[in-house]
Length: 348
Image 1 (tube, rainbow, N blue to C red):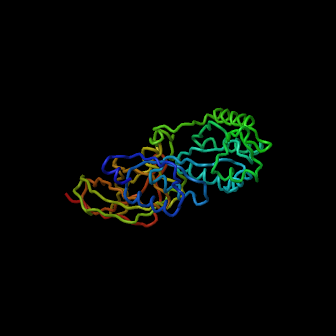
Image 2: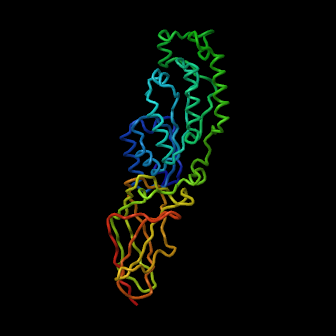
Image 3: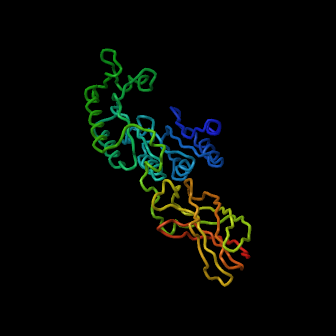
């Protein structure tokens, strides 16, 4: 990815077929490398539902440029999922869908209609799950055919156990005595009608890479307990001419529990770094005069970020203290826990 990004200018990547989270340890290593390298890329791919896909990992994926996950949900029936050798824990399934969606990553849901163990009650559970998560599942693939028992599949090898036979030798016409091709096609027709009724799109277009255009006002108003951070480093000249500028580099660690989005995605309530200048007597002299610096990438809880910001020096010579702080536009300033400030000597 880095080779194509640096030599060809490629910024959009699609992982095809292989699960990106087949090995969670390797996935997290890769995410850390992308974030550390600072690559401005956007990507999506297939993923399996597993309990390790929590909010922390989802936020990290978003920061590393993930814009969409193609999740194999298959069924919302614990009984059917168990027969598929998938976790029957629907609470885990719901938690993963919520974590991914809350991190701002879009979801394409993949479902199987007409699995041999699926009954009408199981099918109804899947329809209800889709409706309940309409705001979280952004795309759903419309299958052309219901489930087909193909050679080399586990079900084909265990066809005697499940009582599966193939009329006319056609695999798509399989039956187990209850399920028939006609019944499965009727169920598939209902599935498509239901998804269309909910107005959930099918195809993934190039616009999915344009996060700011796809997500409407992603950054919500942060609660006071989420407007907290810590300054871990300040580097600056320490002096400036009266009325001039002094450039500081401020490193912060976000200690809240919400996700902070980049300026493009945040819309009305972006988060940036500002400052206040205090005199030797502790009185406020001035604060950032239009030089506020905004996040250019998502920031997850406990993540660090460096800001380069120009501070406007006061018109009068003297000794001043500069207090840097994160601020959310139209909401309020963050609380800083380290107490670090920068000294600024202003001369004529």
